[in-house]
Amino acid sequence: MNPKLEILLPVGPFTRTLLVLHGNAGTPEVMRPLYAAFTRQGWRVALAGSGR
Image (cartoon, rainbow, N blue to C red; front, side, top):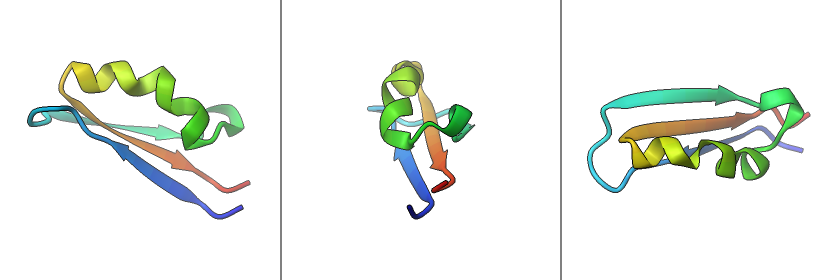
């Protein structure tokens, strides 16, 4: 499995960035629903997956 970086963007301009590091071996696909609420609050969210 290759490392991944998925960026979730808010609808409007973002004010802050949150970097999420593979959350207990979770993949960006698994973590997406857990952090999507931040985008509704104006955050840009970067979900990093280690690939392992």
